[in-house]
Image (cartoon, rainbow, N blue to C red):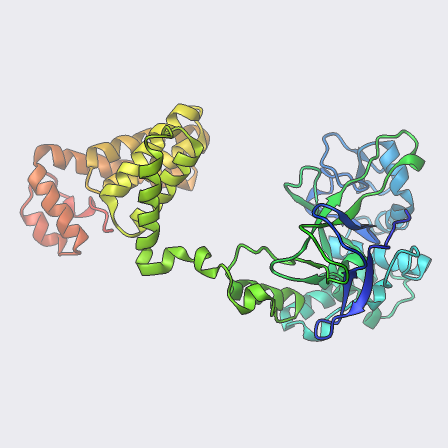
Length: 459
């Protein structure tokens, strides 16, 4: 697969080492570069659910008759992948089982280096073995895992001509540069691959490019006409000529210190991008911590007040806000207000969900507990009973959540009995429990239940 790389060039960034920059102005959505994998493998856990050629999730995959490990959409996918799979097929058949994905990927990389000397086309900007491995920077636990992988590799490929140091170098490259491959819907990570050109693109927490996996087209009966899976680097906005191309190695939705910690642990560098150095948007991401959450409560109340005359309680945005408000208020122990929001939320859910939906059951349980904490024992008990009936169906009687809910149901039933016999006594007992007073003192004032000490949940 020959790819046009005229849009980019390698350059020395200085502190960050090599990088890629564009050789012309680019527009948003434009493909900056596209690159097929040098080598890629499906995760062990999904080896029977994902095609080992195109990495699509499929039902009723065709299994390789030789190794009985690799699975494919059909014969055309299997034929297209044979050049990549044939040495692996023999090794798995000889060993009787497949090693983990790291070992399988390292083997595929080394077999291809041996065949193509690490450069598979003129468009490849660097050889695989010139990529950084950061083995010297690995913590002790990671080094221990690497040594285990090297040992397993030598069992898997006993006739390899490569030494332990070089094999360790390849495993280090995979650890730092492996790119996660997703399924055709982009919803689940299904494998890992190595893309040498992509490895040259440096990180920025607010990048100007995004990487997506294109699974190619394998619909033609003749594998000659298939287009290979490939990653595509796409511009997120206008990029000027000679501007460095960047991608995000970690999810931006973490505060800067957490991102920096993750980058240091996995990729062994200190991120000094603008977002991290200036802590951009950290205040928004951690808004709940401002003035003990009062800002969040104020925002939730304002949103709900503005939404109420416009949105029904079944509107998704309204439900999300009700959920957020009830959780924040419960955390701040404003239980009465939290109970009202949770009640409205559950009423909306009941109009939308199947009556035995597990999410409805869990939401009803949380609302019931919130009412219980607010001292609204009758409503709380009723909700807990409804939740118990749902989760008995969805989770079964032996699930830990169902068992905990059964205990809550029994306790609220006993408390409700006390409430109906003497409301004043119930509230005084509840108040004492909230203040962690001696339960023995409360028991003297009540003769309704002999074991009243065990009835109240200390919050």
